[in-house]
Amino acid sequence: MATMTWSELRIRVARIGAALGVVVRSDPEVCGLSGDNFRLSLHHGGQGDCTVADLSLIDCPNELVLMEFERWMRGAGYALEV
Image (tube, rainbow, N blue to C red):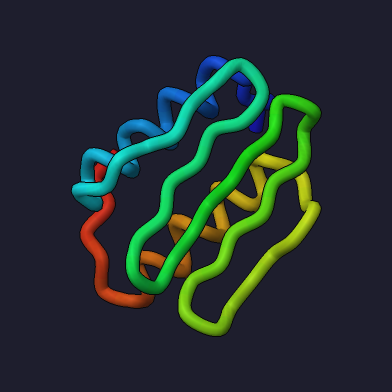
């Protein structure tokens, strides 16, 4: 799998936010979203973290964090068509 660029990561997070109906925070250094029992944050430097219920990844590569966040959210019953 090719590494996603920062721009591609931000676009994907925005799509996830739209699918979940939450507002996405995005600036040149950080992008992320949060809801009642989940949170995702990615940093331009390449590290991110996420939580879904009692599951968490902290300071892991952005792409891994994004993939796991999507997997956990689907497992929690959220529909992510992104």
